[in-house]
Amino acid sequence: MLTKFETKSNRVKGLSFHSKRPWILASLHSGVIQLWDYRMGTLIDRFDEHEGPVRGVHFHNSQPLFVSGGDDYKIKVWNYKLHRCLFTLLGHLDYIRTVQFH
Image (cartoon, rainbow, N blue to C red; front, side, top):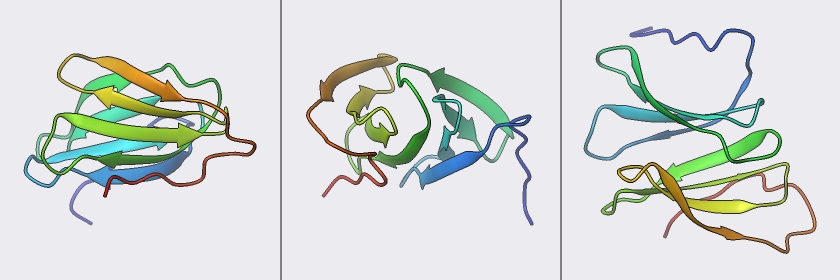
């Protein structure tokens, strides 16, 4: 094991590694998304607009974006540099279990 990250009684539901930076996105059962620097072992930022567990997260390969989806039936596209959700995709009839950019 290289590094252990503690979220203090919060289950991690999904992970995504950034393709160029030493970053990990962790989606949590609490509805929070955490952005970690795995080299430094520090929490860089957190995003908390989901209403329930977030099951999936994924970094975009070339833009400062990531996507998330969870038990609130919503998919959100975020700009991590602006620290905000750009838009939300509604209309899903079940939990969002995984998300990915293509």
